[in-house]
Length: 368
Image (cartoon, rainbow, N blue to C red):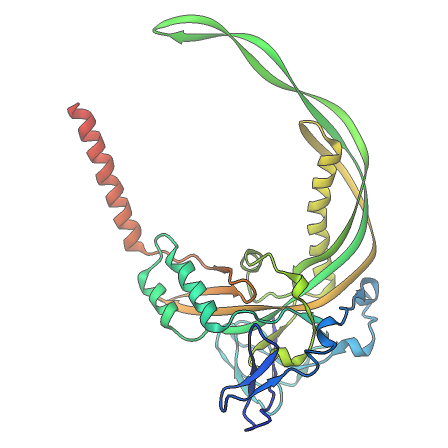
């Protein structure tokens, strides 16, 4: 389920809605062209240190009220997304399946976002990146590629993430494998005759190993949404988190902000799994040798903190031959991920062409 939020800011000149200009620190009026600076963006806002929340307090639901919010939400009847309404809005479309939804009465208490990476790419640039990505796929349907290039506009969405910091110390036990070689005699056939030859055979001696490794983790990134497949969003990495800005609603003007649906506890468990993968690499390096076996790793986590952040994603969903294809574009780098479309006739043509080539080679060989 997803909480969705859209912010509106009036133009000082004509009163129309402003939108954030990607790659800048400005709000732009599409109606009269007026440009307004984001309040305090050029002063202290961009250099404000990003705060961290204590993880233990967050898991206990013991954060101060200033760190929490309770938006009004209603579930999408089709996909289950939790859509938030703001202002005088009483109806909208679900941003993930386009199903009409009507305002409900529920509220959803959540941790406020602390920081975001502003959009760096505008919609046209993101569309071009998606078109190039689709055009470079083997066996992609031409119709879908053209429709995606000329179809409806992409939706700019700020997607929720958790970041986790921790100091870890891990005790391990395992085995270190060291290669050695033995010579053996084998029988081989040479010109129709059997001959004996010697060859080197690699073997491994195993020795017990144990020890400790330590690491400081900073900003381990975990997707806090269930609306998009995790392999899509992981395919958009890496993100330049050095570009994080303290959260201000001004950056959301003209875009949609999705609320998190992966809770802090579940997100922390995923974060620990990611840390464990890095720790396992540290353990292997510490064991050394040619091969390593890890029997046990016990890790203590301390000084754990977290942030709730928003990252910019352009998203599109296209229906082609009764099937829906979803694509996402990193709004910072232009990297693209999505469902892999296939053209049945292109595959059939390739199979026939390959069969013709194989047949021609076989015929030439036979003639020779």
